[in-house]
Length: 258
Image 1: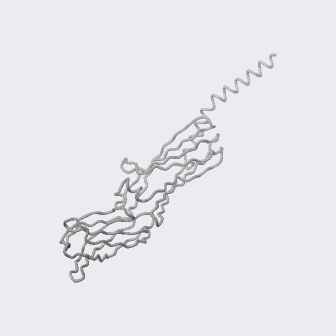
Image 2: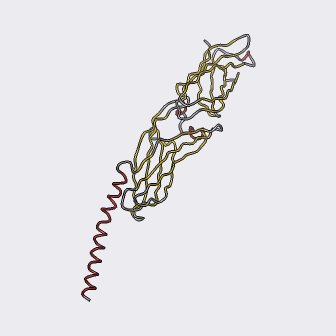
Image 3: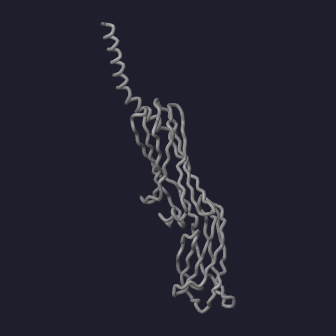
């Protein structure tokens, strides 16, 4: 009987030690996970299809160097510019046993029109976007934990340094020469129709012209549009000009004949 009581005493003591050590070992596991390169988000990749569908993918990984398995792992990334949300990505990782690693991709797919509807300035102006990543998981299938980290990503505008000028009107041929140049500083190639519309001083459409773009990333574009004015009587010395890419208006401004 005494041996049984003594054994129960040892069992209770061991259980109390385990209970007391659990928070400490869990805290140490979390500390090991968050230090070094055990949780990471890699550089995003960007692609645009000829149909104008935009895809951004950000690889994420978790290297479980702690003592306990990790479960219910979710990563949410909110993309912001000047405290304004541009988009949100999320992914779920499989359970990660102690001493192993898991990886996944946070991916967003949408049309360019939907993406830039949040901020049209991203078409023509470079910017610094803030990625706010939130990591949620459970340690030992019991204790929930949330961690947050912020990091900047440089955004290159696809129509950076955009410059449009009406440089000449030929009375004989009834054509207007319009110069367009810009830098594709985006991380993706530009492929699709570029449409230019010319309006007179009365805001009447007097000419339009379209060309298909195929511009590699980090390259300069410059071209001259020869636009025919079908009704010369509507031609004026000034007006407005609008530029569209994949049905998105990326520029509207005035013009004056030199």
